[in-house]
Amino acid sequence: MKIKIFLVSLIWLIACINAQAQPSKDLEIAQPQWEKAPVLQYTNIELAHQDRNLSLKIIGNSACDILKTEVLNSSGLIELDQKVQHDIMQARFKPQGQRWYATLPVALKLNQAPLNANIWLIQPNLSYQHQELQGQNRRLDLRLSRDKQGFIQRIEILNGTGLRYLDEKIMAQVKDARFNPKLTPQQITLPIVLTSPIYTQQSQHIQLHDDLAPQDAAKIWQYFPKLQYTVADLNGQTRYISFSLAFNAQGQLIDSQITQSSGLKALDHSLYQQIQKALLYGHHAPARLNLPLVFEHMPQ
Image 1 (tube, one colour):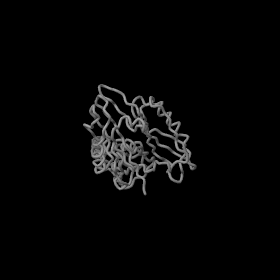
Image 2 (cartoon, one colour):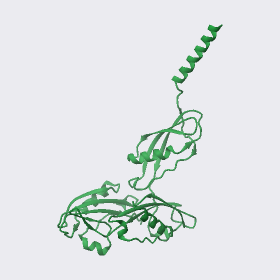
Image 3 (tube, rainbow, N blue to C red):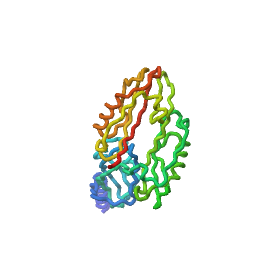
Image 4 (cartoon, rainbow, N blue to C red):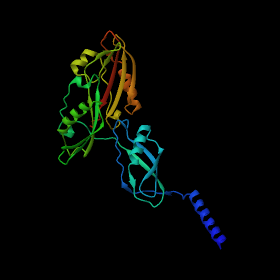
């Protein structure tokens, strides 16, 4: 009798071990339901100023947790893929009763809000001193939420200037603005570029700063080409491009590079060719210039 009980127990134990050694197949889910939807936060800069698409494989446990994400099709930007994966990992799906997986397509769209005078009932009055920029241009990307009347209710910093006091100063000035609620969504990403007309001598090079005021630009540029482009060239959206330019002591352009693409190779090439005609006044030393340009899409 004891031998029989022992054999039954041994068979049961072996069955349990085999069951653990051979896990059940993961359940494939076509359209899993969110219990806590992900909040994907990104800027037009992180999209490199074009719409992006990627797809992920999501693996979840029998509860609500996401165990792992894998990139099936990349957006083309590794850092953006990783950021989306991080945001997705914070979400939760409704319980499925067992371990499961699903394919999740993700579409990341540019903020198409037309950031021109027409969207404002009260435009932000930005005021700052050039010395507050500490010798370089600064950019601040904000996400603004408005109420039904267009008043700004919430401001979030997406990308700071690197100077906290400057971020807070600009945010306080933007807070007093008011959107036209008929022309704007409830959330808008607002890029703010703060520029300095000051140039200083550094390491035998003159470091120039972009977007100079007219009276200051006249002291630096001997000739700056009038950049030619059409609305069609922008392919339906505002474009950003940045150049790094190097000039010799006589003000002649000797080297140029695109440090941020517009997202359109044809437009990049056209603007690059036109920039080659730029000419500075001589400064008795080589000069370097960081030049960001914005080409706003204004439909006819």
